[in-house]
Length: 342
Image (cartoon, rainbow, N blue to C red; front, side, top):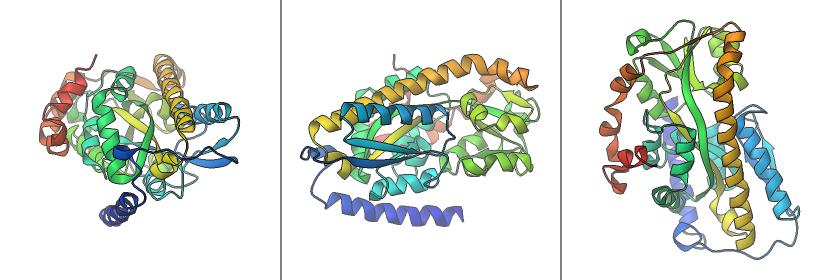
């Protein structure tokens, strides 16, 4: 089923790309702007997280700021908790314009635009702030422009999803402890690859179904940032938080390119400023959560365990070498350049 879904999705995206390329020439290489708004417009913003999640808080801030900056002419309505579909479905909807805005992760976008997979390599980012630093870099701008040119989606905001940790009902100290371990991962190829490198048996399951999968022992554990583990209540059905810190994800706020470029220059800037502030808020919340949630989990009866990080770094070290073909257009050393950003 998964392979069939990817094939169908890829065909749809190819068609969407052709439509975008032939539809007026708007986009990264020839950005244009439209006329001033004469009446209020309402945009839908879809994401898969529960209310109160850092990315939900960011989305709500962007909505508030966009309304303030445009005197209420742009109304962004936030739809959390997969109300408008999975991350894959929401991303597809933004490409075709049936949803104006959506959150989408690098792992999801990488299914379409392979170079973005460089951001999913284990131990690429030092912390959440490193993600913001990357998002403002010239190489990020080039990649985002290329994504828009090829798939018709504008990156209006980029931030961290958080530092991924591994939940289980046992202590996990080295990759050997994950032998035969059914690890829930997102329905994305790259997450399956790093799960295998870590020694686990990856089991792709949608985020909205992950709690039940843990509860019913369909999987043995999952990997998510502390904020998400708490917000999605995964700690209720697990006994250990293993601080593997194996991937710090980059997430994006995407907007349909034609809709974005249909706004005048001032309103385009209003959107970009609103989502830039949202991106900063998300990192602030994530950093605060990483400081406080360890004690919260301990108080709830969980064990917070420190694995051998060097063992996991060694186990996953070959991934940037094995998969650099995906981002070769930006240079073989792209991964190293991102790692070394200061």
